[in-house]
Length: 87
Image (tube, rainbow, N blue to C red; front, side, top):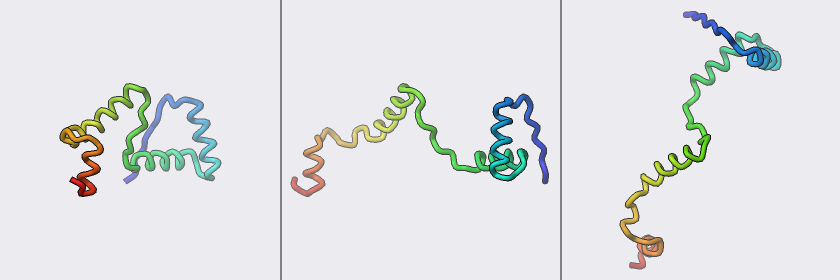
């Protein structure tokens, strides 16, 4: 089944970059746009890097939360002794 997609108000700079990319890949602008769209839609979503200090703090807080209370009041030396079997 063939579907037509019309993109209105495409920025001229984007159009030019698409044209150049298509030429570099020896394909039409339409084929290049299809390939880019398919690749972006089909690739696994990966978390984007944090853009601000606030976002970084939020991500770190979330990770810290997964370790919360894992030490059960023990310090690093106590944990290492336990792992080595020195207790």
